Amino acid sequence: MNLLFLRLEHIDGILRSARLSGYLYIRTRWTALPGEPAPIDDTKVNDWLPRFIVLHGQCIFFYLLSTDLSPQDSTLLSDVVEVGSLPCFTREDEGTRYSFYILTRQGLRYECSHVSQIQVDTWLSALQTGCKVVSESDVLVPNGSSKK
Image 1 (cartoon, helix red, strand yellow):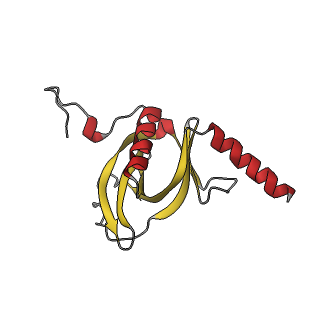
Image 2 (cartoon, rainbow, N blue to C red; image 1 turned 180 degrees about the horizontal axis):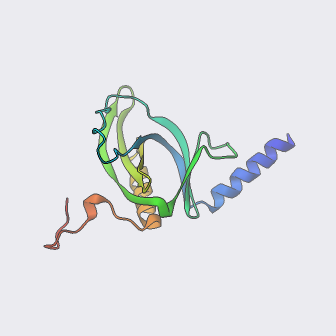
């Protein structure tokens, strides 16, 4: 009983100081290195896993569950080079999912999705602000218009 209380107290402290937290479906991909063949089209592969994500301080933490004491993975915001939207998609029995990606300087790409467009927009905004990056679609071209 005492251990459970300490665990919940630890989690509560992290969540109170987090900028943003919540469950997202996640999958990871590596960017092809120069000279490597292009990755195969894996859009039909259902390898999306639910993860509890916490944006805290200068880091993004990936937990298996919201009650876990230690994250499974983490990424420094300073290592994020690009954040942007991905096309929405539909999974059987789940309806439409809205998605975005987080690309790190090491070439690791986190693809994230949620059934709520508002949740995805909130994460995109928080990450773009926290990482001080813009998405590819927000880059300005020389004539001053957007590259959309």
